[in-house]
Image 1 (cartoon, rainbow, N blue to C red):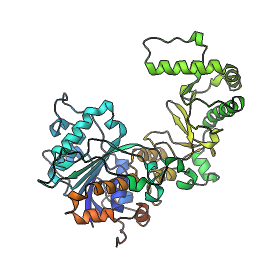
Image 2 (tube, one colour):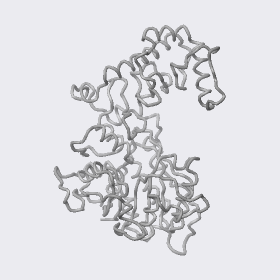
Image 3 (cartoon, rainbow, N blue to C red):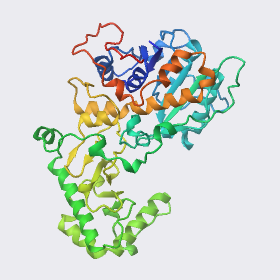
Image 4 (cartoon, helix red, strand yellow):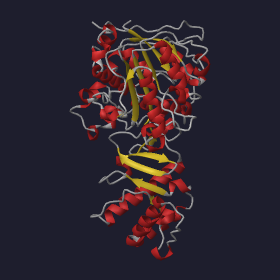
Length: 463
């Protein structure tokens, strides 16, 4: 064992996979969702504890000593008026419980993950409070958000063909009387893991890889319904027809709204409408007026799309010069049908918006979705429903991203980690990709809820 870690808000164990591949041993995990905890136990051999607010507060501390603290924490608005910047203002939020653990256990490294918006304009105050709190607790951390996506990382380093921007908060404990915590170190440098790679170089079929779409079993389980195929048939006919009719024009990149295809003279732009809606209504009306004959013919052929729900009467073509939906990856979103080039997938989300392979007209399989998040081939979701599994994967952190982010953090802060030689050495001497170690891990075929809270696989010798 080179170092120990605790896994907060653990989900199904994305952080666990990355930290284990770096040579760490998990000594505590928490996850309030019982289904996710069951999957965590099945694969990592540790049953996560429940509600962290009952396990770590100003009166109770059941989280043991550890070297590294990780977690994808929920972000909540802080309760005060905004005049304070520091730990006291976090009271009443889950981040306050994290801060309590850090205050008492003083882990050498803290690595937290959240959605990109946590550092956006709507959460500017929350972001400042988080950074100031960690500095108040004695940690080196940058005020600049560290945004990383799996598709930015070279596949040989554990990158995956998925566009998934997430913010990472990289805090390292400062040795007393050496550095001031308010000095900004800048974000870690991810160049070693991302050099010589372009996101446009991804190929889903090659790099995921995809399962056999000709398999009867896969088509039965993941094929589209007749209604879903009808939606795609209609819009594919639109794309192909538009290309033939207007070969020198591009299909607009803004959302096409069938219900907004009206004569310009009939366009009623209420002053109370938000600017973005006025913009889209105007663009759609102009598009209709310019291509009215083609559009009317297409709508007539497809019965005016009368059987389509409102969200399927909206279409967003982000596939540049491609000529058919069969060349794209499709996302059935609440806001419409979105098509992108099939080189990398859009972000997995924790709701039923599973990406669709346009060529084979099927959804990504559970196995493919797990691969997008970097989970090993042996990872098992037990007997739960596919929808539950997709939700868990959508909530998960990408293993390859965490693996490379914490390596970059250690490199940035090696000057204050040098006394913790085993920790730094284990992380920096790890293989280029987490896959190299994860593929050699194994889990037991059955694990009871009373199993000892220890790793149930062996880690290969580091050398």
